[in-house]
Length: 276
Image (cartoon, rainbow, N blue to C red; front, top):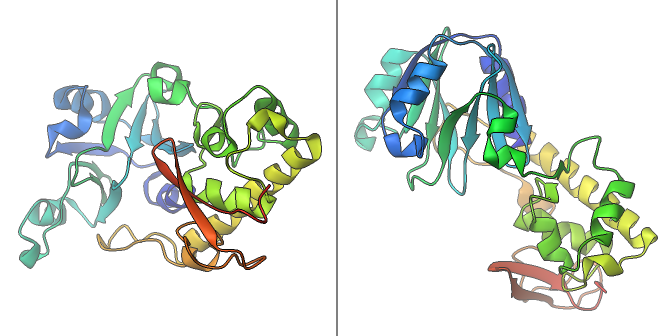
C-alpha cells in the first residue's frame, strides 16, 4: 500500500474531481452510490494518505475517500474520460477492463477495480468518522512505531506472536507474508506468547519488522506500480522471502525443513530449529 500511495500521489494531488462514475454500486456499500457522487463531485484532492492497509484521498473540505483493496482490489489509470468509457467493463478482446468506480480528474482518470467486489470506495467527513481507520493501531512504517512502543504492546498481549502481529488494532500494516518473514529474521517462534519476550527480544523483533518492510517497499517501488497496465503486479518480492510459502524447503539459515501450520485461519511458515 505504501508503494501504491507513493506512486499515486504525484498523479492526483492538487487535481479537482470533475466527475464520479459508479459502474458497480456494490463497491460503495453500505453507503449509496449517489451519496458518494454528491459528496465528492467538485472537490479537490489535497493529499494521498495511508495507514495500515487503508489508502485514502484527503479532500480540500476536510473529508476523505477511503480505498480499501481487500484481497484483489487495484487502481487503474486512464488518459481521459473517453478512454474510460470506451474500456470500462467492455469486452476484453477490445481492450476492456473491469472498473467499479472512477474519478474523472482535471487530467486523467483514476479507477478502482475489484472483480470479486470485496473492495470498497467510501466517503467520510473526517478520519475519526471512518470506523476502519478509528480502530487501527500504530502504523508499522511510522515514526511512532518504536522498539519501546512494540515492547509495550507485546507486554499487554497473551496471544501467539504471529496472531499478535496480524492484529491491525495493535500494529497496522503487517500482513501474513511480512509477519512470517519478520519472525524468521528475529529467530522467534510464531507460537510463542507475546508477553513472554524479553526487552532484547522485543528490540530484535522491532528491527526485523522495520527491515523487512523497508526491503519489501524497495522491491515494490522498483519497478513502481503501473496503473495503466491492468495486468501489472509487484515483482521481485520472491528474492527477499526466507520463510513464507517455503514449506518443505531448507531454511536459508540452518538447513532445517521449513514447516507450515495454521494460525487464525492463516498459514504460518517457520523454522522449528532457528525460531525459538
